[in-house]
Amino acid sequence: MHNQDQPLIFEQGRPGRVGFSLPDLDVPEMDLSQLLPEGYIREEEPELPEVSELDIMRHYTALSKRNHGLDSGFYPLGSCTMKYNPKINENVARFNGFAHIHPLQDESSVQGAMELLYDLQQHLIEITGMDEVTLQPAAGAHGEWTGLMLIRAYHEANGDFNRTKVIVPDSAHGTNPASASVAGLDTVTVKSNEHGLVDLEDLKRVVGEDTAALMLTNPNTLGLFEENILEMAEIVHGAGGKLYYDGANLNAVLSKARPGDMGFDVVHLNLHKTFTGPHGGGGPGSGPVGVKADLIPFLPKPVITKRGEEYVFDYDRPQSIGRVKPYYGNFGINVRAYTYIRSMGPDGLKAVTEYAVLNANYMMRRLAPYYDLPFDRHCKHEFVLSGRRQKKLGVRTLDIAKRLLDFGYHPPTIYFPLNVEECIMIEPTETESKETLDSFVDTMIQIAKEAEENPEIVQEAPHTTVVGRLDETTAARKPILRYQKN
Ligand SMILES: *Cc1c(COP(=O)(O)O)cnc(C)c1O
Image (cartoon, rainbow, N blue to C red):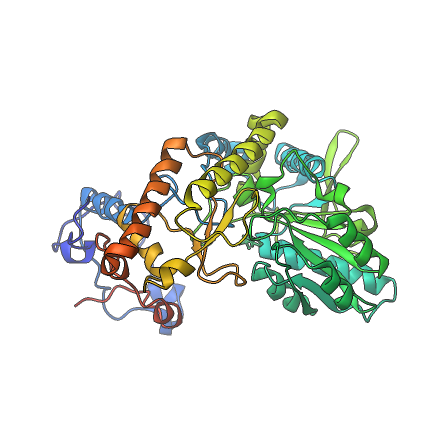
């Protein structure tokens, strides 16, 4: 364990200590007032710590150890697919021809980068079963919004201005209704049945002439494969609506099932989840959107296409919804995803899904005697438990999550999806060993026993972390983002 009381760099400085050296100035010194407007010029020197290079190295290394990352331990954060990010991705993203090009360079000088993007599009078309893909959106939610704007543009082009409702299951990720709202559409909720799947009768009730689309996550956020997709497609298409596939959970169906074959018109993927872009802490991500042929004219422009042997940005798209992101999208994440797809190959991607699903089912079965299992059936890549039984003993799911920190684990997603009381959502991913899965399960079993025998130890957790329980609401509403000297 590192020293938690190690002073931050601000207290370590000593006047005159330096961590850099610069050559002597060999040009005339400029008068600041010629460079900056008056209000921007400091009257006094800033109070900065004066430290050596070694001090600053240790400062940042110490800070990095205060965090929990995927490379430091198990991270079963349901719905987030925190799988290992192969380091070869980083090597490739750092190639000069990728890392050092300028986004405004002429097409003729970045043909290699454009070829990679074009090829990535082709792979994603194959993986999803769609007809065309755009790589512009910067994340999953951005992809959702883009996809809904495409659907809206499609309906409007048909003179169908009253299709303003997006049907979203009650188990959906919170970004779904939010994206609908930002796209100027209204959300209608469809209920889940007792099996955790979309209730077809309720779907028939809410679908109608005002339906723009049904937005479905599959496998859904309970980790269950929606069994009645073909019926749902018939119901929604029959009413003139479109089908949107939230593909953030694609890790569970890669090389096994394709949204395009199930009747979906639009799908977004989370390359930073399924295709190993590093994520957490807010990005960058990549949320490509795939569409069927009748939506292609509306795709964001420019579209990367191939003319003969040459790759070009096609701006001649009169019905396009326009650009949704400058330049190439988050190019570096696209390079990483491409590297991953090429290094895994089709058989590798199939194995990903098989192990992700096997790992989740293995953990679910081992934990089932100790925690309530609201939907007792095979899961896909993730599963949900309920902490109802522990709650009756005075131990809440939040306490269980905090107690896991004492054992060096990132907690699972909790209190989501909203339709399960005291929800605990676990996604192990395919990259963890059986030993890691077993130790986590053993820890969860120990916590379940503590809840019965010694609830205080769970209620008061965490005991070993740099900071104790935080006031998360105040931290989010009134964050203190600057160092404050005591
Ligand atoms: C992560 C996720 C999203 C949102 O993706 P971001 O990249 O975080 O914007 C949407 N839907 C589901 C099911 C997800 O798991």
